[in-house]
Image (tube, rainbow, N blue to C red):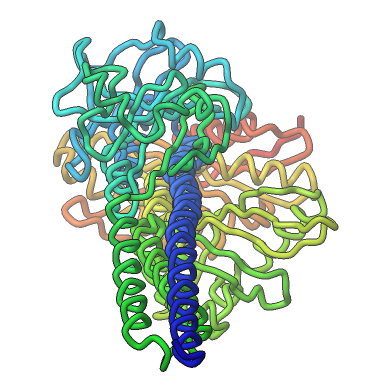
Length: 636
């Protein structure tokens, strides 16, 4: 056998051996690389779920904050005749969140005062009233929440809804959140909300790339992808099937550690301070892994056969093949990562909610580093508009509110705070609409304690704020005459008295009463009497000066508060009003008159004494013949 033949045979054998060895190494490398990358993505998906789980719970806590801090609730919570206003506020809150199952206010005695219920996600909520309201004094959650301080929250276990002592069918996973309710510095009860969890949990487990599980502190499965072992703490289940899950052998390690990498799965603790120590477990889908590995195996086998057939002609280039193959594998992994990233973005619960997550840089224009896609529904600008710096978030804040937002941020930085809440402020959308925002911000610092960025969680509370403003106006308006009522007049008097005591700011009042008004009701009826009161109120409002406050004091009696007005000026105005009323034509009644009592603040004058003196002057005007103006001069 010639040397050339031997060399050819040796070269061929060397090429085949080298090729075979190389292919075996690459096959193993591909399999391990794909498995490792899948486990890494499982970690990223778990982080994504944890963030959105916390956001889902935090959204409800924000709504409880909005209720607690609502001016309508604070102003009317202890007024029996205003309970309907509070119930309306609770109903509005429930309507804005389709996941609220039940929202209640329970007083210090355990009595349900206001309760809003909803049967299922998306159905219409309704108010429970009367005998259906219960006493919850002996319920564990009432006792636990009652012990909390202002701003503290209680979270229940993640469990199934129970009706009449039995688990409701079909099952309804729920979570309860509660906090004490204060009126001023006085604790007056608790707020507690039940939220549906089924749809949210299905969202995080219904994904082809992973099998997702949630365990409680005792290792029972609460959620899993096949829906055959779910809630096995409460429902009978097949033990043999449970022991076949991928992580069963490492269950004790999972329960003990906040984070754990197992063989083919990743586990981490869910951030929920309810004593359950919930664990999230993410297992990459083996069918997807196997298909990717088989696909790579087929390609490598084809390459190996090609090398064997071509042998010597291709042996010179054999060293190039592994490099090309590696490049191809890297490209495949890159494509897998991109596909996973796109799916994670599509699954983002922020993009499906009415809240927006912002991350902006610590620079002069607050340029945006990241924002969720839901920003489009809030501000009408796209995610790209912000992330390419076409628009800065600071430019979206209402010009009248930017100083407030900036000052609150500066104060939080000076105090070294990590997390703070802005007072509600306005933003301006792309189409120039005004919206109200509830903004909670985290200040991010590096290892040197230098501020690098800010993360803000924004919620649209426009409907709540507008409803609050509407109810506030309604609460201070007399329903018949549509001028201010006595409640608001009392508030104005206290403010004016404070200004007088602090700055000696002059203020007078006019107390007037329609003469012989009872005869109108007796002769013409109450409908005509009401029309006279309405027309009388309109006449007064049209006749006073800008800045004067006109309100109905009670019945046919009216009060006018005159800021920056001394007694002699008030007397002149009262006389003008008396003459205008006397000459006014009141429909079928034709003419009516009024009697006036005029009084002014002095150093010795309390609000009660001021009203008493004005009332005495009014009485003197009626006693001396009516249709008169009488002033009171306080000497003591």
